[in-house]
Image (tube, rainbow, N blue to C red):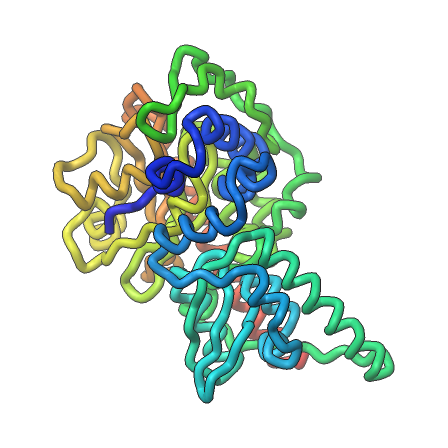
Length: 380
């Protein structure tokens, strides 16, 4: 699908300026956060304006903060608090067998499927701003604490059977697990490389000035993968390792023969934009080729609109040369890592090291499944 960029939508609507967007983008990359959250933080857009743009970008109906504030606690509680926090999802209305759910990423089919499995209801996904969802989660958490006290401090545990399809949910990042691990500082990037996420946007001249949590070396990657408790924790670890070699990186998860935008790293990719992207792996593209062969792609981008839409996830300037590495568990494709160095060829990069990191990542994903299955079998 053709990805609609959040910044372009807001500019077209006339609700923000190029300068304001540039400021928010720099903050977005500096703090490794969502663009929309930074636009709200600076007061460049209202929550209503942002929500309208997110609805246009995702193609899902919006749910305003007021609807979440008016939601009945028993409806919100249909999704247990721990799962709601992990999936970044809050139910807010129920009509017969249909549950309306507010989601930061309402295009994540695996999340929607897990909510359906947990609740036993049909799911109608709505898009919500991060700020409104976090407020709703706090309200749900407070209600859960009151129920905890009413039950004399007896807390129930909520588990769900995890096969490969159920693994790919919107688990909250466990970046905190990575913060205390040894890291190797990255090489200084070329200050002459110009980055701009949208046409007409003033470029960021010195991307090395943007703070990052640091890169992971091989030992740090393995420790981070062992410490991670969710797929996002594992994905973040792989990103921080790959960032030693690549400037802009996107991760895509694979669910039912569709690759969905997942996580990002570096100057250029915007999380909202990437998470609004999905591509059918049955259609001919660079991703379907890598998926079928199991071998990475290194070098120039093959022609075609689908391939152009894939690499557009990296942001502007549009890449002409990328590295695309599969992440597999046994014979199953579960993710792709794609990255580039704007203005430079990816040929000559230590591809074997990155492939080995992808293989270790696949093993870590398998271990998460085993841990969850063992925990369920033991009732913990």
